[in-house]
Length: 176
Image (cartoon, rainbow, N blue to C red; front, side):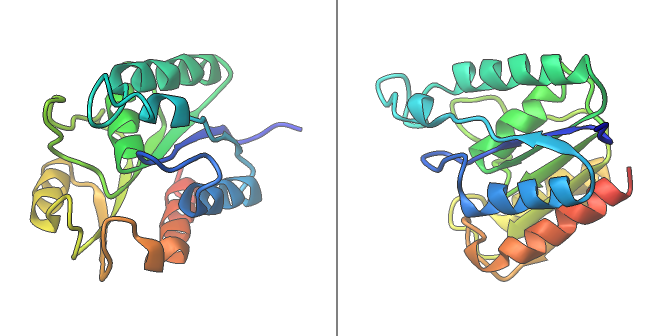
């Protein structure tokens, strides 16, 4: 069975590949004819001796390896939540991707470099009450990239907006 492309869905810090949001995105991808995978970064998140956020460079390299292999087969869409959004955006600078879907993206994450992303179709969902990443920073970041931005009445985890996240992801995939 051929697919429209491949989605790599990266969970947030101290979450996992079976997390509610990435599972909802996987269901959307499948329904719309995209293959998908959800890498497991939990081993890297546990490496607190590397940094408070685990081993971010190795997390990024793991995603790049998967994305390179997928890009050799066809279109790739990277999606992620929080730290998963950060590595997805950074990976887009090195791998050709069809689009990015970022949930609660950390636009600034010391000591890591500021968030950067390729100029590709991009959709972002972020909580107005995000306690870690001020919504105003994400609005400014999205504005300079002309990204589609959905701001919702939620916190960093976007727990009350899993369905809204899935719908926004479906809209992004349908537009490709």
